[in-house]
Every structure is written in structure tokens, then in C-alpha cells.
Image (cartoon, rainbow, N blue to C red; front, top):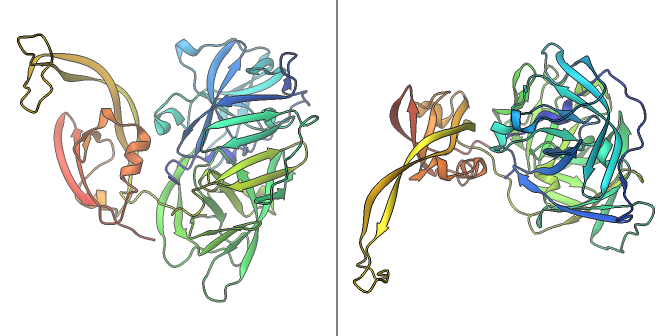
Length: 445
């Protein structure tokens, strides 16, 4: 899947500065490499990160230069060292937000350890990533983890290898493409090319932030170059959440997108105006971002020490780029008590379970269990769902015959991306009343 919660983590730009840190190093038990598994949710990489002895879940985000903690529950409490109050400002037109800065913390990922880490703690979780991703997400980490290591990300196997740059040797790879990084404020940028119009066939050169913390394929900033304008076929879509509320942009497609030798056909591209990207445009050379929607189609080596990224295509490179055709922005809504049947299967006089077609099952009792709940956060204007009568705040009970609590957030998103004209039957609860709606997915681009 390509979009679904196109998270704007990449756009944090703070006026604060921090002292140089030693960063992550390999401990004595393993001086050369380290491997971990990760969860891939909506094209975003979720890794376990231990902070001062407490394991938390963080998004690995090349688009941020600070480690940010924004979601702690009572059971996740950790000790933060040397704290003081600060103000942070992010994407959008919202006011600066209250936060804490904490220094000299110990971070650990298996045998990778850093004992002098600075972390910013946002006191209110404006992004509410946990609800968007359907699992607890505590924060984001980027530069501090990546600056001293070479990282190989295998999106297919969901494994990350960390290598010591002093001992790592690249294997010869004729199918690989290496592109140099240019760093600005500790964030990596690469050169790419985009074909914006089939007429003429001229590619526009662009400089893009490499943003593993964005689930979209490509973002382009309108008018950052004269040729970068929203194509004629587009629709306004929700791209993520900013400090001032939802971020909207024009979702469209372009004929081709090039990363080195790799040509990606008909990717979805979001075009953002200057108002929503004011802070992100402070780097005048920047024209947008390339996110997880593209990166996940490669095996990726991220090499901050040598300022380069290496790409090797995987089987999904030529797959199509889908998007949410329902107009519904669905998020996790915590857990609710669900009444479930407990079945007792009929058994024969010999005490063995009857496995033939004539076996009978009886409902003997009910159990009440806490199950995931999902709520509609936004409904796009003039979308198929809005025209059918679905409203913001509706709690989803069932989609196409499948109980919502049996689904994950990515399952719901997938149902809204499957194909044009697919019928969606949705049962919701509104003010305690169950209601049913039907609509068809509508392909707009």
C-alpha cells in the first residue's frame, strides 16, 4: 500500500541546537554487525528501541534529525535525565508546542549502544500515531541512530542489518544503483527526476528528502520549480496530521519517476502548497520528498558515514500504486467490549468430534472480550462515502461482512484500495444506533 497515513514526521524543523554526540557504537560482544526484525505498517518501519532500560516502539525515520518521544502510557514510564522545558515548532501554521529536552540518556538496540543521547519529549501527542497505525508507537528516531552505521533494510523479509562502517565491504552488485546524499540540517537529500507531463517527455530534475518516515510514494512542493504544478487530474486528499490539524494536498499521478537507472511508472504523487510546507521550504533547493511508498520497492543500504544510498529493486518495483478510494480516514479507537458466541461442537457417542458435513454446533454461552475498535476521523468532501451518508465520528462495526474487530488498520486500508467500482458495505454505530451504508470505490486519478 502506498499512502494511507502519509505521516509528516519528516517535516519537523526545530530552531534548537544540540551538542555533538558520540552516537551508537557496537559493544564488545559484536563489533561488526547487528540484525533485528521490524514491523512494517503502512510502509513505515517500526523498531524496538530501549531507552534507559525500557523497551519502546519507534519509527525509523530518515526525515528527522532529532529523537522525539511523544506517546507514553503509565505502563511505559521511563526515567528521563537532565530535563528542561523547550518550545518546538513543526509543519503547518500552529503555535509552538510545549516539550521537554532530556540529555545523557542511554539508548540500546541489542548490541548497538549509545550512552549520551538527547531526546525531545512532546507533552501532547498531536500526531496520535498509535491510532493511525493501530499499534502503540512511542516516538521517532533518525539521525542519531544512523550517523555512525551502515544500515541495510530488507522490506520483504522485514529485517534490518546494522554494519560497522570501519569493517563493512560492499559486495559487487551490477543490479544496484548508488546515489549520493547531500545533507542539510542532518537530513539526507538526493537528486531524482520526474516526468510531469506526457507531452514533450521532458524530465524535471528535483532534489528530494529521503523520508522513510513518510508512507506516501512522492511529495512535490508546488512552484518550488516553475514546472512543478498539480496535473489536471487530481483530487484533494488528507496526507497527514500537523500541529495545526490535518494536512491536505492534491493527490495525482505522474507518468514516470526516476531514481538513478530505475524508472518507476505512474506513481501517485502528492502536491503540497506553500502554506502547508512553509517550514519545510527553508531549504531552498528542496522540491519534496521520496517516502516509504517508493523505498519499500527496494532493498536499501543507507550509508550516512559515506553519504550515499544504494538501491536494489525487489519484486514489487513494477507493482501499481494504489490509494484510498473511499474518502474515509480511519484510525484506531482503543478497545471496546464485544459480545462473542462460545460454540460447543456436537460429538459422537464414542467421544470423538464429528468431522463430517453433518456435524452440528450449538451456542452454549457468550463471552465478553475487549477487542480493537476503529473510528472514522475524517470524511473527504464529495467522496463516495460522504455521498452515501457516512460521517466523521462513526464507529466501524463491519466491512463487507467482516467484523471490524477482527481486522487490523492495514486490512481496512487495503479494502479501500482494492479496485475501482468495488462495492463497500459498511455497518457503523452512530450515537449508539447501528446503521448500514453502501457505496462503490471511485478511482479519480
